[in-house]
Figure 1: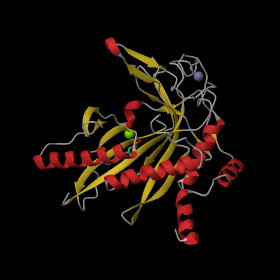
Figure 2: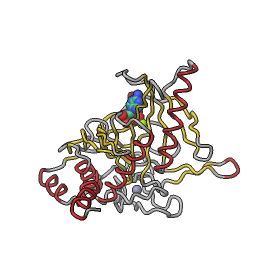
Figure 3: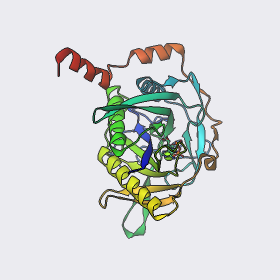
Length: 311
Ligand code: ADP
Ligand code: MG
Ligand code: ZN
């Protein structure tokens, strides 16, 4: 690492703790038979009209307050267009500009050193379904998860080590579980993260070429994947191999990342405002009520236990 620094930004996806999906009344319960919880809307049939789940808006706003964000009184749902068999509508309903929350921060302590990580945005979006790659060379599609409400929490590229990335993820998990925004069950995929990693010479202010490691589902995998990726990129620089912006997958058995595809830029998704959904409005009364309902958060609670009980 001598002479270089790692630059890391995380995109954390959390499944919100609602009973029904983001835009229809299908159940979000985990573990049902395949395609038991599907209707015309979350099955992507043309002409089906979405209706927004208020509880999801409440939980997203509370996550925003807990992470010191500005919660926008008005935000927009857009269509993010791409093709995949588990995305029957051909687009994901997400928020591009403006998202429901922006400009937050989270303080993360590693080895006694506290650093402030900026939070760029938190947006609401629906999850895709799942492809189940079976025997006999067939792939089956299960849409139970399609339309489940998620928040995506995007950090600034402020993280500087694998330990810090894992600790940031632990803090986000603790906060979201504490405020009841997610059940935090990582084995069931309720919290997962994409890690964006680049390296650059120390003192350089421009960002290096990043790779994005998809779908890390444990704190340990976040740390191991980022560690591996930093050393892989440094080795490329040493060998004079040019880095490309790409999406990679972490193989937790072999403990390596592997290239999956080159990475799209946002404009390739052709985002446009979803014509079926009006702006998401959060009233002053809702802001005050939701902020007031937040419990004491993990960091202040820990500080209070140290101060009051000498723990
Ligand atoms: P996308 O969905 O295309 O990945 P986002 O803006 O949602 O785009 O997320 C990009 C993430 O990558 C953010 O967390 C950001 O901080 C991080 N990031 C952007 N550029 C770099 C870079 N050069 N090195 C490391 N992280 C980066
Ligand atoms: Mg990304
Ligand atoms: Zn449905």
